[in-house]
Length: 196
Image (cartoon, rainbow, N blue to C red):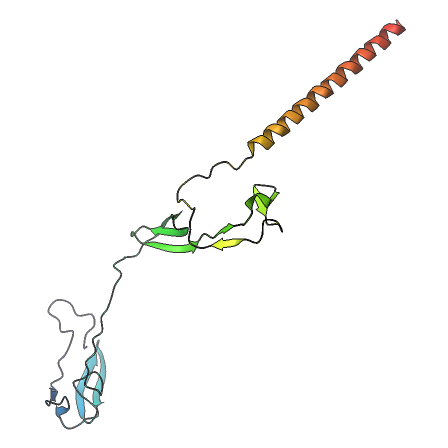
């Protein structure tokens, strides 16, 4: 390459007047000198001078290796240009997928679910959290994503019967306390009437 910034009719590559010829068995037939001299080499306006390229006439063949086989190299491209992060979602396989503006989707993480042999024996903690107990057994982790529905809302995990029981107890306690206040008020009125 003599000019990497060539445009239009400008010369980008300069031909080296050396022709390599190979015999029927793939060995180098010509040139036989073992070296090629590039005189007055100039690259992108920088004078390099004379450069000699040396090669071994015994080892240079038209094949990719000494066994007489030719290898081809392919360049694969995924086709995506530059893109910016757009959104993140969870698919039905339990994978966290990031989407970019160029249309590319990349799996970023995996949601792991846990099952128990006796789910009714789990210990209830605050905030809708459960802990394993000796009766429930240890967690059985599942990486398949079964039971996960991407984009779905979770149903309520409130125990209705337990909440109604607490409501009834609270209502009865309130009713009892109002009766106590009423009885105390009547007793106070009677005491005041006796003084008069």
